[in-house]
Image (cartoon, rainbow, N blue to C red; front, side, top):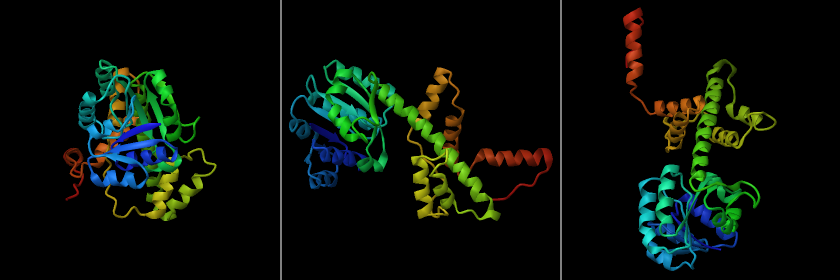
Length: 301
């Protein structure tokens, strides 16, 4: 099948390459000329503008977006819309908020342009391992695009599926990422406890390797943790600052809206926020309060 890949950052480029390995014809667009040249070197085509990209595709066109969520996705779709025709399909493979997805799908539906949302997991390992794809959209459209999803997934019958109507793919991926926050936090806290037990002088990489086999806490995330500890056992040079790209916040907000307790996911999100407060006013105030009521010593900066 022929497919356009819009956004040739690392993940988009890797997905394009996996599609080409599977025999699909890929035409890529990215504002960066170097990214366009890179896909050509891998055997694909590139276009220097969205207009040229659309012109290079045969109808009905399929265009996969791998661009940052929010304004950039909106801007890309706005620029594409007048160039597309009835029967074309836009797939958003980024981490968009599902409410934005519903809005975009409704706008494109007025022009009879199909819209699918593919919650995509796999990161930098997806090129070789395959991607987990949680797809929302019209059943007939998803079925027509089956060869694309089967190629990107770990196997034709594993790691992908239509989870429901448009919006459901990004909703499922949102919760997936919320769970990821909790898992990461649990591993981080556990290894921190091990690291602080100084009298045992534990080799954290060794522990991670032991847990990888036969343990009830084994996982791919633990595999990656073991890799990180092998390369940098003391985590030297890594600042204790953890970013978030939004999905954890959206998951917590959705849990509150639905009245569903999500204690672990919420706590893990708050820990990420806390990691960025190098000058914690709340901690300073706590110390001041202890001094006020109990005369406890204050540690100077």
